[in-house]
Amino acid sequence: MRQRRVVTALAIPLAFAFVAASCGSDSSSSNVTTAGTTATEGTTSTDTTPRETVPDVDTSVVAQTEKPVMGGSVTMGLEAEATGLRPWEDSCSSPCYNIMRTIYDTLMEEQGSGGYGPYLAEDLTPNADFTVWTMTLRPDISFHNGTPLTAQTIVDMFPLQQAGAAGASAISSSKLTGVTATGDLTVDYTLSGPNSAFAAFLAGAPLGMPFDPAAATADSAGYSTNPIGTGPFTIKSRDIDNETVVVRNPNYWRTDADGTQLPYLDSISFRPIPDEGTRLDALLSGTVTAMQSLRQGTIRDARAAGGNINLIEFQGNNTGGGMYNTAIAPYNDQRVRMGLNKMNDQKRVIEALGGTGISLPSTQWFSTDSPWWTQEAADSYPAFDFDGGKALIQEYVDDPARTDGKAPGEKIDVELSCPPDPTLIAAMQVIEQVWTGTGLINVKLTQYDQATHINNAVSDKHFAHCWRWGGQGDPAAQIDPFVADPAVSVANFPNYNDPEMQQWAAEADATDDFETRKALYSKIMTKINEQAILWYSGSTAVMVATEPDVKGIISWDLPSGEIGVGIPDAAVRWQEVFVSAG
Image 1: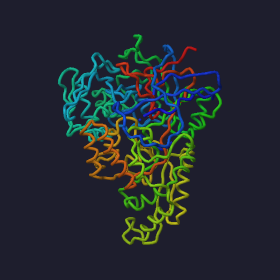
Image 2: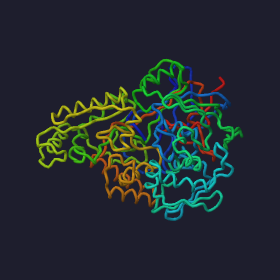
Image 3: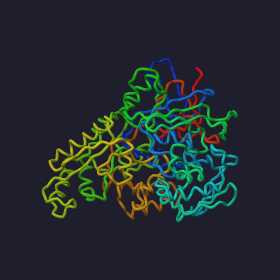
Image 4: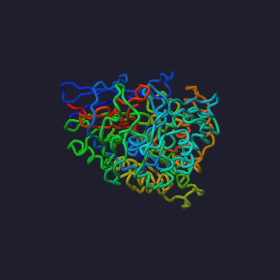
């Protein structure tokens, strides 16, 4: 997966949810550099099908060339407050990950060249059939409270992960059944079946971010406001919906290539600023020194803004759109879902989102230059067809056995929900106008703040619900929990239980052959399209924008020296960020 653009400018997709280069400059008022990364296992596809692309320039991933400076602070504007900071319990999306990655290290980490490399782990090796994974931890690593990180720590975390809302879902999806310490620093993860992508589950919350199990057991609720990890920063204060401040961990275990102890920054302040325009204005006015966004309209506005900011963009394996709660009527009827999907005018929706020239229409979770993208899945996604969609809705409306209990001929009721961002509202209004134009659908538009929007999905209090799909890592980490039995997987938000898709996911987990796995995930993407479980708008463009002296956002590396994956999902790894002296 290649990153799109890094823009040094003078001056949405939809809720939830995953490269590195030095920022260039020239004498013009708008300076452009680019960066990229290849995703997934270091493999490439033999598929040479021509595909539509957004014009861009791709270059090799390169490391930071400017000498880092110790000290300084950054104030980061986030699109929302973190729902919580407990890896085993709290669902985490982009704003949450920005905070959590300062507090917690991951056992494994995504590499810019593809696949996963050890981070807190020193090594991770599977047996022949991918049912037992043996991990060796790095020595002499301690939590913020001085407690050492050992194999027993990983064992003691497991019961909390099993009981946690986020942890239980990940455990089920990863097939993890047991964790055993086989030495002071060695751990065996035992799975109920093969999982060739298990490393992906150790590259983020909830399974891959070690926490102090004793402190978490003693005060689970308090852990969310006073989290303890092994990461480069420690929590100083957490004022919910106002500001979270982290400060440099003086005992952090990592050093840079010159032997300087990381992190470089003294502190970071995170401020939730839900309104996109206000957040961009805060950066332009100097109220914050960095911001993130997952909205095309904000990227468009940032490109055009006056002022002096660095604009780092990424468009990867993440797509905007929405889902239907297939457990309730009328969304439990495929005719209704497909009819609504046929009347989703993607290009108009992308235009309303401000994404024209930034994002392409999506047909699957993978963007067009991903090695996982397939023509088969693309061909299965319905093109805009108002008459065809209306005919399907009419067939349902006239059916005496319609599932919503209404009399034949009565309109169906659809609640279309999205967070109250202006571009999202505009996009939903485009969809509403088309659906209402059939004369067969009563559309109710609702808006909830992002935290409530996410909680509505987690608790199944949703109907037609805008969302973001996919992630930059191995597809198994996203797809396995999505297709798992909704009775055990909180991430199967549409509540569509399909044994065939579950079998395909299991077959993909049983091999590390790229082409075999790609074909199986293509079948899953195709069936999602055929059953109209989701609708898509466009590929998710994300950005992190900073003042010019904030450096190192996309030039972090792994302990091995391998360059990291950068900022997919607009989630920064903060350990090598610094404020330039000049």
